[in-house]
Length: 184
Image (cartoon, rainbow, N blue to C red; front, side, top):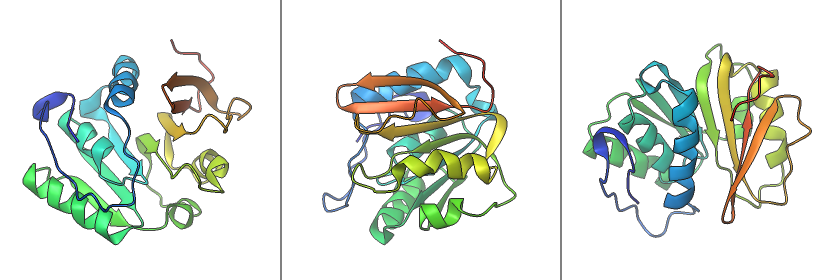
């Protein structure tokens, strides 16, 4: 796993092979951040990385200048790995939380984020309910972005806050925002 941009660009991390994860491919990650770079000022962005797995996206966000990133995963070994990687990279404002994402999103925390990235397991049954939980429980700032990584079999295009869909190989990203303004 490598960080593709920012202060830790080209830095390699070697997560344990036995983690139950499907990391975002480098090609898809590069494409995703190319899009997000057009819309986001990283230094002003607090981010939430759901189903964080190896922490690849969380590390990328920190490397690009996000002042605070919260990585959430239910798997204890993933959480321990992300904490270890954050310490190795001296990413002191990367908060790592072990939690069930659905339980967490099912209640309002009183805290909102500028960017929420969710990469749930593709076989997850309730995946299509995640955007609704984010918006119903006010996890996203008014101009913030929700990005869902998902299989091609899921179509979010009818969701009230859906903005766009992009496909990179087998990886699909859907973008959501409270604002109805279209973005290129």
